[in-house]
Length: 486
Figure 1: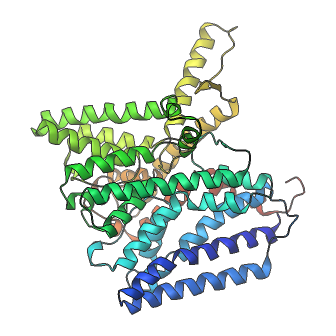
Figure 2 (figure 1 turned 90 degrees about the horizontal axis):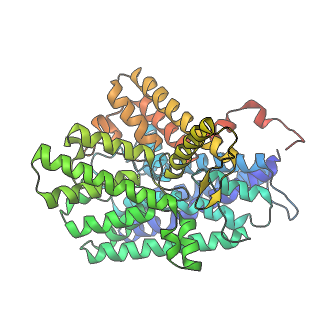
Figure 3 (figure 1 turned 180 degrees about the vertical axis):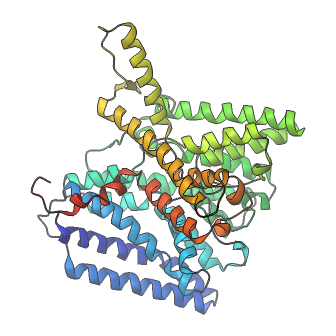
């Protein structure tokens, strides 16, 4: 591994993190919150200092070629470093202790949206903006930054894209990585803008509209109100949010193709069609359950069910009503949508619908082969034959997620949390959702967790954001040894 390249690229990333703190710094200064302005200023200086320190040991040269090891190291260590630096405004501002600030920052950049703040409404706008920015930057920004910066550095740049992009398949719509970066970023910004306008037209003020738009498109779910959407009781806002949460669960590469070749390509995408089918089917089941079991009005039941299915399936985690009070059947289906997540290549977390499709098709292929041994079968998605390695990779990921969910639940049980709550926290953090059921339910925060479980939740969010195997590779001793084979 060329550590000089790794240090150089990490320096770029820490500098970008400091630059992202400029908007909340300006807002704090304009609001005469001098303590908060000083906290952000300190955080920015720390980012600059870390950048200079990294550049002392590393740097980029014109002929550098990034290998697979460098790509893995930059992806994993970069995300970890950014999340740690993101704690400084919370600690220096006196809002959170070290453990709680780690949870808040990891939850922000991972798009989980979990919070330890019991009352976010007393926080200054600068801190609220930083929380939303961490969601937005973590949603797509790191990927786009590296695709743009590393366009001339060969296969390592593409590996960083693969490591950071979620899902079993990673597609490029254009030959050059820089062009892909520009297209994805333009779509990301455009969706955020239209989302903010929609929220403003539904009655939110400009600050709330922008913050909620950033955390919606990033499927992070941070809000400027304790009760999030329930603060308004606005059906138009809830349907608008549900729409944009569903849109954000679709592949951004799919939107890029549709922009270039026509919107009809969205309806040809098998994964997105299955995702929509899941959303509306589960919505119908939960609506019926709410009507029969809780005697809710039909319109109110559909409204509540659609919003929360969109919220949890997209792993955004916004709350319009206390879904922890739903009947057991409804909560079971909601837990399932949390586990499945959105589409590959979206900002949503979870297992990803594409993997579920591949696994079902793989099982069907095995059954056909048992019946007709001589028949040549292949797994296809969107009319393309999927490489066998991709299918096995989906199976491995499914196995890893299930095992880790159960393992993490048992680990948290040793910290005094009962099994149901432990499993809820594990699934919620591994799926990057945030809220769940029980101890960190719709109206609760992660503040109730013991410190050990909070730190373990950070590990879950770290694993989830990089889809497990990148982090596991970093923990392998042989990875850090010099080898000419890489």
